[in-house]
Amino acid sequence: MISPLRVAPLRIGPVTLETNLLLAPIAGWCDLAWRVTVRELGGVGLACTDLLSPKGLLCGSEAARDLARTNDLDKPVGMQLYGSDPAAMADGARWCADHGAAVVDLNMGCPVNKITKKDSGSKLMCDTPKAVRIAEAVRKALPESIPLTAKMRLGWDEEAAAAGCASSLAVGLTKVGVAAITVHGRTTEQRFKGQCRREGIRRVVEDAGVAAAGVPVIGNGDGRTAEDVVSMMTETGCAGVMIGRGAFARPWVFAEAWSLLTTGAVAAPVAEARKIETVRRYFERMAEFRGEAHAVHVLRQKISWLGKDINRGHCRALKEGVRVARSAREVRAAIEAWASGGPGEREDGGSRGSRTLGGAAGARADGVVDRAVTEP
Image (cartoon, rainbow, N blue to C red; front, side, top):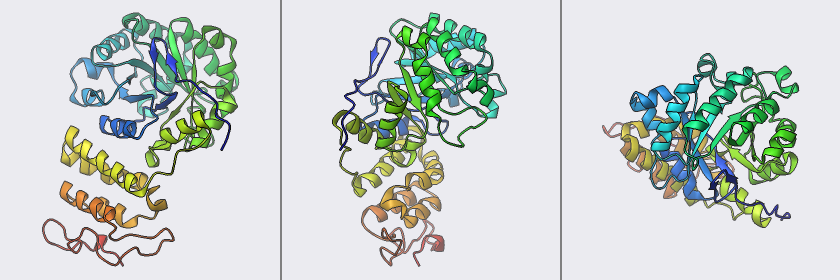
């Protein structure tokens, strides 16, 4: 038990969230199915879409519009734009405003080469005047009811970070109407390596220009547990915390963190049945929103992450059952076998059962026994 911080739900311009915790926009991990599944577990104040290309949205690209897809269970939602042309970004923002965005966010922090090579993402931190012009154009394009935010890093490299690049950009953005700023505590060159540098986030929080504007700063980086969230806030003074990779294996971290922040106690441990049900619901939502073939493909890729906290990570049978599944029926059989207490490992790594995964001797839909899913 710790003393609660007595934090208030985060307010971003005219929008008040239910908590001060945000689900980060991470490519490949923030589709509608994931956002709704994580929200359902509690504690999420705002969830953000994947990076959206204004050009893709406006030309009717199916891929771009699918990334921006939302529904009534996905509110409030932030839509994140990336690009380097002020006019195109303004047009993209109008599209977002017309298609359900409660908040529009500018990506100034993505370190991926295919983004930075287009002078987008964190490359914008190398040209502060241009970044500010983009923000100004987008702010003018949006109705007052939809706040504009921005997500950045500490700078392109160590030299830029030491020179206070993030603070300089943050001050410039606040002057043109940006209502909240998220700072990831690494440079572009670091990508996701090394530790999040909280002192860099604190520097932005304490900058006189940012403070004078009354703009909340949201800390981001290495938020894996409720305790990480509390320490991020106490060490940086940030008003909220954005979590991305930390939610891959523990999407209930938001509920745990909000409980710790407001009551001083972490919520009761999530039951194993709830964990496997979370995987099931995510899969079924993907199947509903994008089709079963897509859901099978994605879950096979992500089950290693999703299984890291199931039975303390000792769920090899579940992971293998999903990885080798060739149809939605086989995925469901693998999940059901684990959920019903069938084969698997105990917490000490020993066998939890001697049957084959999937009930019918681990058989595939064509009747052939798949030995890759057979328990030793």
